[in-house]
Amino acid sequence: MPSILLLGVTGLVGSHLVLALKKNYPSFPVTVYLRNTTIEKYLTETAGVSKIVYGAYEETEKLASLAKEHDIVINVGSSVDPTSSHAIVTGLNQRPAGVKTTLIHMSGAGNFVDATSNTGSANPNAKVWNDANIKDMEQLHPEMLNGRADEVVLNAGKQGNIGTYIIFPTGLYGASTGPVKVLGIIQLLMYLKAKELGFVPYIGDGTARFNTMHVLDTIPPVLRMIDLAIKEETPQGSVYERCYIVGANLDKWIDLSTKFAEIFHAKGIVPSPVPRQVKLEDAGEGEITMLMSKDLLTRSERAESKLGYKPTQKPILEHLDTALGEYTLE
Ligand SMILES: NC(=O)c1ccc[n+]([C@@H]2O[C@H](COP(=O)([O-])OP(=O)(O)OC[C@H]3O[C@@H](n4cnc5c(N)ncnc54)[C@H](OP(=O)(O)O)[C@@H]3O)[C@@H](O)[C@H]2O)c1
Ligand SMILES: *[C@@H]1O[C@H](CO)[C@@H](O)[C@H](O)[C@H]1NC(C)=O
Image 1 (cartoon, rainbow, N blue to C red):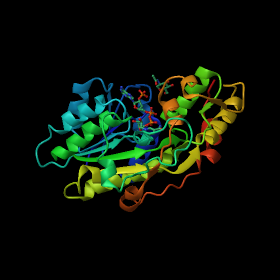
Image 2 (spheres, protein in one colour):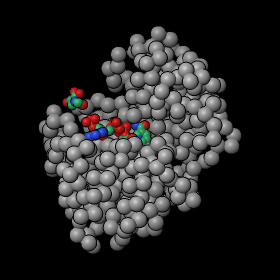
Image 3 (cartoon, protein in one colour):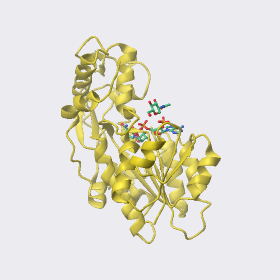
Image 4 (cartoon, rainbow, N blue to C red):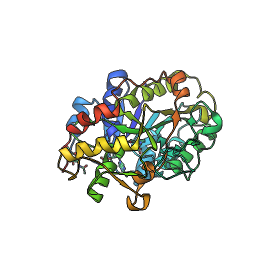
């Protein structure tokens, strides 16, 4: 049975993925690599992992030698910082020639924000990125939001020893599961921005569009990537034909910020239940203000045809109050 090494088990995606691995591949031994030493009982008894190794991604030699011992590494821990990807690839490249080796990497669709406009208004000429269009995927580059780690993974795949698969989800909503409650990146950044400014912002007229998806809709495509990796004699196609964009809801930022403001107000985090219009320069620093200022337009044609991708969860505007209702935020 192929062994799996999972990075990110205490994160929003990883908290669900580890349970899905147990359910769908009960005979595959799963190792988790994490920092938090307080959830050992949960991981072994409930999540059924066979091995726990403690460490940070910065402990690259430890991580590389652990990766080397596994057939499939799944990294849902870090997409912006390439440190863990470097270490994983170093380890996997030391496996004996001819032994099937797979790296499933979660990047992010933040790579595909509109490069031509950041006014907060919809740009009718914004590029629509399609995973089925190889020319689009060939434009992945290190200056993109998650591009430095993507580059490490793509280069490793091009060398041919490692079968690489990259999934690019759009902004995630939904609650984590298990003992560690985490918001995931987008919900966390919205919360931190509201705390920083004292209100929930939107930029310009707020018609710029953002794609989101429920965290549970990321799980089936990751499982299908495992199926492909197991089934195929060698990884099929070029590295760019193993890139999959997944997304679900396209909303205007003004509507997203309105929903976050309602919820954060009800929780006592911001005084106003309505978002405030600001200029980009008045929205403070960071990834979330950049995202708010631009369109993010993607299509998932390859994920649909090759992974059977089809989102089934409730749309963000209908589900966010339930999801964030599970958290104590102050
Ligand atoms: N959430 C989104 O909207 C979104 C959208 C697109 C792509 N992505 C990407 O998809 C992946 C999963 O997202 P997520 O929302 O589930 O992320 P998350 O909740 O922030 O989880 C990150 C996980 O990685 C671990 N981690 C991070 N840095 C580490 C380090 N230096 N050493 C050891 N462990 C480290 C965290 O462990 P600790 O518990 O110890 O911190 C946690 O388990 C990420 O790469 C993210 O960038 C997320
Ligand atoms: C570790 O997990 C516990 C839950 O068991 C959580 O309360 C704590 O905040 C976590 N620690 C860190 C550093 O994330």
